[in-house]
Structure formats: structure tokens, C-alpha cells
Image (cartoon, rainbow, N blue to C red; front, side):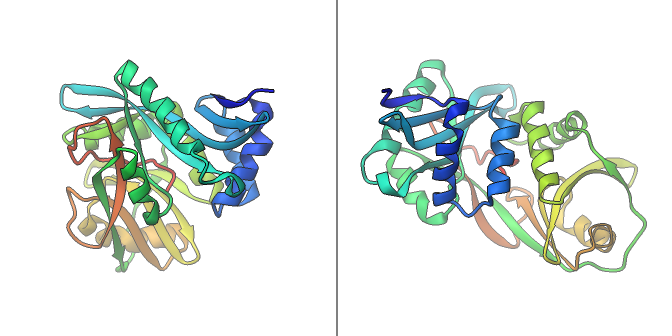
Length: 275
């Protein structure tokens, strides 16, 4: 019977789904979607007891880019331990395992805890807070004409890199961007290229109740106000709530966007975190 830390297998998905179900508030349909669409390109680790996973984490490959500097990075997602097995040190052991791997190959580790209350725990593991979002509310004005079309993962990623390359940022692989676009669509969202003042801009958003929640865009608060009426008409929403980089926005609610390990604190812009 295999015990301890190992790579997850597809046969572990039922047990991992149960951990997810007990630890987070996601629906069974989302959990199934995640493992169906992402399992083959992520690196999932589990801590098994009597062969059954009781703690887990999932790693996505990325890069921390700052000008000519580039560091390999791995994003930690949905790290958790089954409630019946907490306070046994399993998750800390999992983290120390991937920490050793990261140090051996020069990788940065980063993540965004699902709950603010978890930040102190990750700080005890050696993580430090790096960057924040600004969650901005926009009341839409009069609707204006807006040309928009669905952006492919490759096009979205090109526009994203062009917009954020002048700042320290996380660069994602096209397959991660594809997953995020599919995830956004799973929640009824749209990922769009927009024509504004003769240039292409981008936006990833989904409606929740009557609120349009923009998870990523290169539009500024003033530009969102300018075209907010058209966006609300396009999504059938009444209000906009947008996550914007704190380096370009000083209004709205400040929300921690990333904790980093083994990385310089450069206020690195991080998004596409499945927020």
C-alpha cells in the first residue's frame, strides 16, 4: 500500500474530488470540469494514507518576467487537506517536498489562498505577500457602440503580454490561458478582444447575478466607465466589478493577489488565477 507523497494518478480523482468538496465551496460540476480539462497538463501531488489521498496540491507552470529577467515558476492551486486528517502535518510535508524540487531547479512558487485567513499559515511556510489587485466598482453610463469578438487563447495571450510586459508580471503558457478561457465559459463568461480608439484591448468576464465581474483586462477605470454601458448591455448586467493591477489603479478595495516563495518582491502582476 503506497503511503506518503507521490504524483496523483487519475484513479485518485474521486478521493481528490472529495477533499476539494470538503474544503472549498465549488460545485461538483466545477470539480469534474477541472479534473477533466486540466489533469493532463498540471502536476498534481498527494499525500496518501493507506493508499488514499488525504492532502493535495496542484501545480501550474508559468514564468516570472521582469524585463530581461525570467524565472521558472509554479502556481499552487487548491492545496488542501481532508478535514479528518488535519493537524497531522501532511500539507506542510507536501509543501516541503515541492519546495525542495523548486530550489533544485531554480523555480519560484506562488499562490493565492482561497481565504484571507489562510495568509498567515502560508507565511509560516515562508511565503511573502507581493502584489495586490484593486477591486473597482463601475456604474455604467450611456451605452456606446462597441466592436467585440471572442479572443482565441493565443491572441489573448499575445495581447496580455504586450500590455503587461513593461511591468514585472507572470507569463502563462497558451494551454493555461486556454484552460482559463474554458473555465470562464463554464461560468457563462466571455473572453473578448475589443476595438477601442484604433487598438485592440482584451477582457475576461462573467456575470454573477446582475454584476459583471471582470477577472482580467487591460482597460483602465476611466475606459471601463466610458464603455461600461456597452459592456453591461453585452453581458446583460447592471454593474461592473473589475480586478485591476494595483500599479495602474489606486481606487477600490485592495485584495491580495499573490504570495510568493523563493522570489524577489517586485510587485509582480499575477492573474489568470481562477479567482
